Length: 103
Image (cartoon, rainbow, N blue to C red; front, side, top):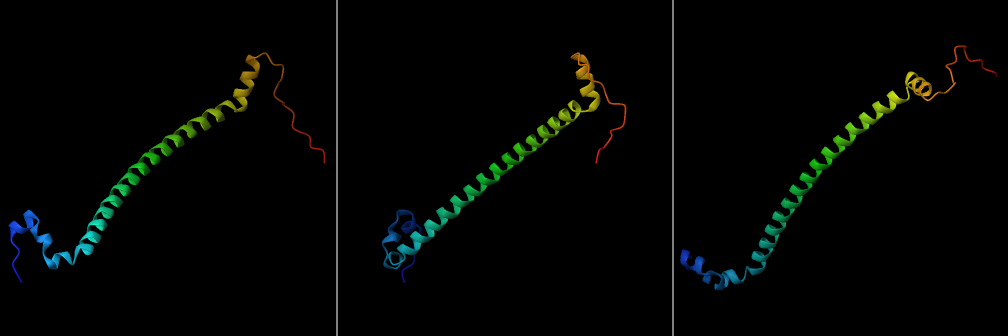
């Protein structure tokens, strides 16, 4: 078996050797798998980045929901409703007598 030199590797003449020509399919498979591995790495990295963005959006939406719920709670308090009705000139008044239930 002839020794492989650096010159043969660099100028590509090693690819014409019989022992290497028999392995072309294997080398092609290895190259395809390497490209697939790199591609999957980039896809995974993109998905992680997208997941981080979506988590941030979800957190912002949660904070907005809490703010809106607090505003709604404040607006629907009995004292707030009474004040709003009085400012609009309504004649409605709060019931001071207990409710009578008819069964």
